[in-house]
Amino acid sequence: TARDQERERAAELLQRVITDFAGVTIQGFPVADQAAALLFEIENLTVGALAPEIEGEDDKGQRFKLSDYRGRPVLLVFWGDWCHGCHGLQPVLAELAAAFEDKSIAILGVNTDDPPTARKVLAASPVSWRCWLDGSTSGPITTLWNLHHFPTLYVLDKQGRIVSKNPSLGGLRPVLEEALAAQGN
Image 1 (cartoon, rainbow, N blue to C red):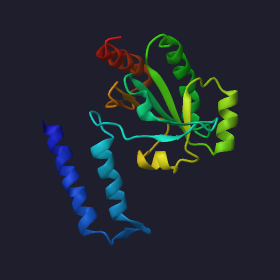
Image 2: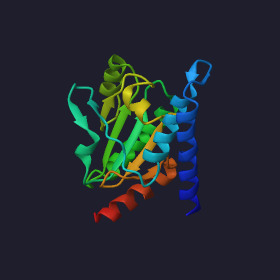
Image 3: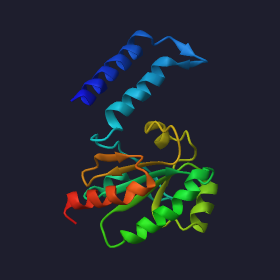
Image 4: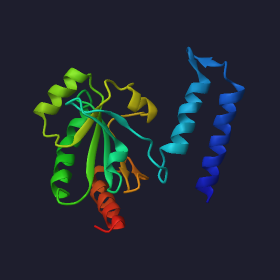
């Protein structure tokens, strides 16, 4: 398709920037690093791609991985208490968690607050889903996933493939229902 050809061309050009312009910086930042992050996003964070692994600790210090949830659709939310848009998202997610409670959908979060704030927020909030504590907006998980804004949402199918990136809040329920239907639930 034309979209696949455009993606391949973009990947080719980004690879050229990485190899041919490794020493070039803009305001002290290597252009090759920026190109590498975009290349990773094109290859790993678009619809159809297998989502990169996430491994880390929740607010109770328990380690877990994204791949632990294979076999069921996942709604993955990158958020933080500092993010005003995330505050409006929480009631919608709480409603979705209740609506899909008897289904096999997992809602997982990546919280970008500093760990003490994250623990306090999670203890006091209606967030009923498990969250990795990433420590900041430049933590290892958010850096790997090349986040540009918050909140950011991904819907993954039962194999861990990205089926939607940043669906509208109004469109989130149909995307989740479609992921469930594809699973046979």
